[in-house]
Length: 590
Image (cartoon, rainbow, N blue to C red; front, side):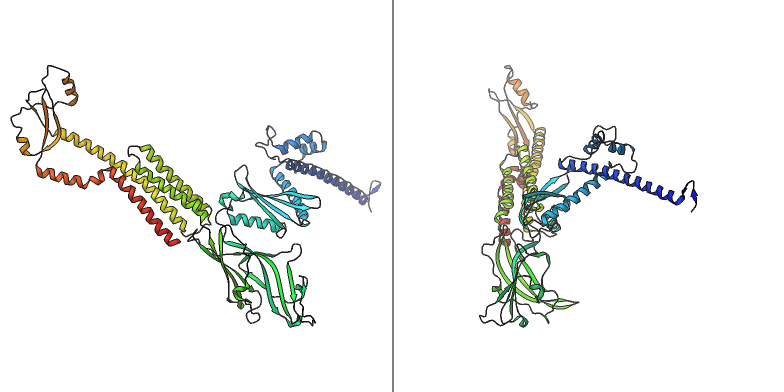
């Protein structure tokens, strides 16, 4: 080997490489120490529940956020951290992306720790609480309580954004997915929904189109391979460990969304074998399945749901499924009750199901009919709507000149009906057809709205009538025959706007005419004692035929012009029509 000075080149290169490796390792160790300090800051702020970011994170800002201010404070007493923050160009650890990555990394480690603790806990309780962030986005916080050897533990797990899934099905799917992710579906013993029950009425009112049922599923069949000799003819009972070693029916639930076999404290499976080879296979199952609910008659509806069982692999040529005792195969607890429904009846059916690729299969059905309780909806929907309609009729008894009273009453009833309709629709699954409650509420809304329009018509006709009367009065004064009759005496008589025949008019011949004196000037003239008093007669000459025509036309317009008559008829028409609608509505839907 060639030499460079007194030493060999390869040895010098090895020494240079060794020094570079030492320097690299020292740098890596320093970076790790810096990263530890950053993580400790994240954990500290998290424990104290303090925000990280500031409004302005520039160096000149007075509000850079707790994370940056904490790092700056620590750098004053930590030379390595101060050197890193002052000189580093590639990785400083102060950007918003780095903060989010650190938070995510810490949360992931904590989540794995919580999962490990839950796996050792026999019981778990769940609490969901609705909250909002600074942008008013809806969030759902998930908290778990569980029992360990050291006592009860409470662990906050996650914030879940539920802005687009506030309804019951979205919240339920999120909660069930969360439980399955942490492996505690079969350990759940308690639930608490604080605030989640009022998220856009998502958990109130009508629930999603599925149902959950816990049942004991018992299979009976005969397998001569399992027969044995017994002097007492008694059966033998085994637990679930033997199930994996013998043949059992491969029954599954059609249209099931979620299902599981209970395993607390052990798997809830029982296998009983009789001497002649008959087998009883029983297991405790909880299944959530879809139900094709029809809400067209809601809330006066009855729903029929079915739980369907079928063999997964064996066709009807290989395996025949049937109910052992028909409807008597189903037995229910008499104490079962639902908050919204009355369970009317259970019954069983069976039929064949065809799949084009595999063939015909036996399918068993558990059918149950549910009748919805109406009293809740009567109190919350029907009675308030009816009262609002009746309240709108009060305006028919209020004087037509009381404009503020009638207008404010009408607007109040309209807005209240709108609120009732909005509240009912918010608690209902979105369907594309009209429901029975929609018909009642919208008809009630129309009645309330028509009562407002009725006053608008009354007010308009009153204005038109006043204007017409004013014009007729002015026309009568301008077309009258003024005359002053020379009658001695001290009394003055004034006859205004009379209608007389020609004979009556001619009987006044001989009287001298004078211009008609207005009433204001007459009062002034009364104060002057020297002015002789006289009688002023204003006559309007018209033929009898003309007078008859006017009277007939006035009779035709009497109902329209008489605004008091409109209110009077409304007092009878509106209540009568609404009562008639209620009779038809309840006779059709009840």
